[in-house]
Amino acid sequence: MFNDLTRTAAPGTPLAAQARGLDMRLMLRAGDEDTLVVIRDGAVADCIPGPHVTPSWDTRLSAARADWAEFLAPVPRPGYHDIYALLRNDRMAFEGNLLPMMQNIMYIKRLLASLRPEVA
Image 1 (cartoon, helix red, strand yellow):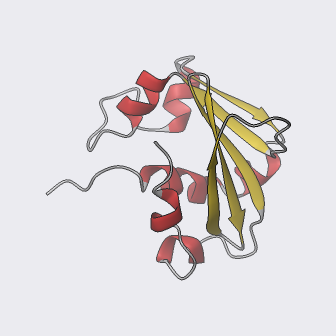
Image 2 (image 1 turned 180 degrees about the horizontal axis):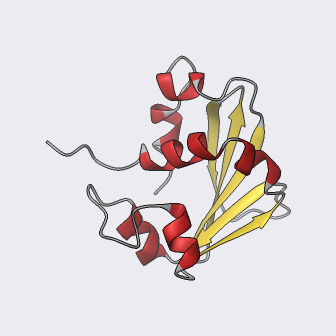
């Protein structure tokens, strides 16, 4: 579900340039499946699907698989268009150290939105 991040936010992409200096481990949970997204200097260096034995991450965003699918639709319906909308409607949880995410919130939002198919 999240593996395309290594393409959409690869080193040298415009998205990676938005978060120069950001190094973090972002865990994305869809249902009971985790994907560890390793970000180095603003670029996604790796997406490691779980299961993970003893994962180390800075921030985790957790939502049901169906809610992620709605969020990743080409044009998400209201309530699914933004991670804060999901949080507000109790469809997503933010966990861990929120400081790196909040300091780079626009990057994180664009990073996740980069997984949406382009609308023609």
